Image (tube, rainbow, N blue to C red; front, top):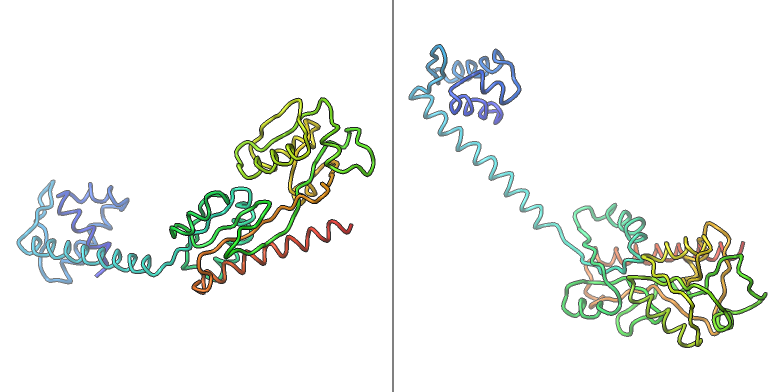
Length: 304
């Protein structure tokens, strides 16, 4: 029997009214009356005594309503049990991702993974290399996608090798063939744009400034490396950025390399990669593929 019809009849019994029940389910009263009459004809008993303003249950009606409620309860419990079973069968991979890397992870990596493993959820945890080791050891994450100037020892894999560069407005008077080190040491009355909330980038910036005995007259802290680049384009100051980001500038900027090179890596850390399930192995391959494609793109851009 149609469970929706059971709901209609139970509601009529509770409301003791066809009109109120019709309004409740957005039905016309004649259609609702026909549903009730069809059931009575099918069962061969009267379920309701009809008075001029009420629908009252007969003895047969009370038996019918009690069983109808039991049927609906069983049906709802069946649906809930099946949903719980589906959820139990869904696996979850917890991945720590540096916020700087999250846009690429969500835009390029997750869609490819979900196209193959629809029943597996990927839970992203914001983090960085300072806390990743603890999360992995305590099994709060299975893998981590991080950035830094040195890839972690142990179970790690470099996805993308980059470098940090000094990025300046094109209009600044910089000697030809100058390297970033000497420019930092000789700049006067300049503004340094620094990452506000990224502890890894701030540590890199401070270390490079200290190594080159450089000190800016003004420091402006900005949220997000992409916003640092926008401000360089707007001639507000200089910034130390990954080369891949600096080369993505929409406006002409000056890019100066350090000597020796200030390496910068995007890398992964893992717990027991040999025990990875097939879903985890595929996710790792999606990550590697995304950064291989980025590397090829950057090489093509550099050669132009």
